[in-house]
Image 1 (tube, rainbow, N blue to C red):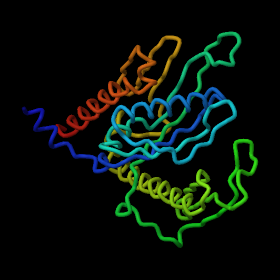
Image 2: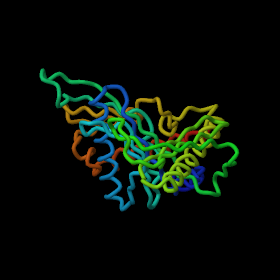
Image 3: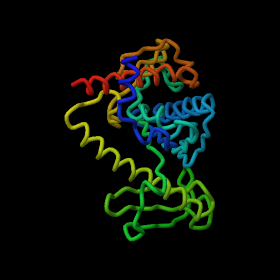
Image 4: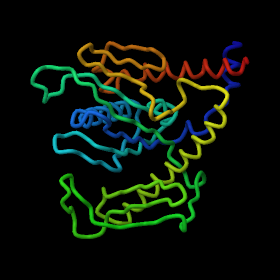
Length: 267
């Protein structure tokens, strides 16, 4: 009972109930990193389906072998951010690429960023702080996709944050999507600044959200997934990759973060 009472004293993350913007980018490792980024997209898509969340791809940049250089997804539903926020960081994969003739295991990586989706009440942007450029959409090979200037690039001048959107054929739709992503990125910057100020005296292993931190390794030859923040290893890589075992990792991270916060209350 005492433990339950203490749990209620832990300050709640006000963004936990928000929807999320999920961004996946291929890191080091060339084509293999792009293929792994596509696999991570599949993992989160499966996880979202199991939790009854809506999963909408907002922007996608593919390469010519079915991999992905970058993808931005809007995930909406109950408590989306509270569970996806632990996914921010570097995800490392160790496996034999399909293109590898000698059977040698390669290591490559993809980065994941999860931002709480900003609502209009969270973030107001001064139009004078924006530079908006329009241009023609480009395909994977650089060729022009359509003949109108439907692609939109918005630059937030005070911070230098840039969002480009060319997924829709309509400039108006691309602009609306770009503004939504821009608001979420600026809100996330604000949130990180506050978190850094609060955490100046304690470094949380779990909730730091450091995008440069290697958080998880997916080792295909050994069939295991290891989360380095809580030292949990699951020997069920296919279940993690289809999303069905991801909750086991997320639950361990939530428990660890609660324990860290309880310990800081006792100090």
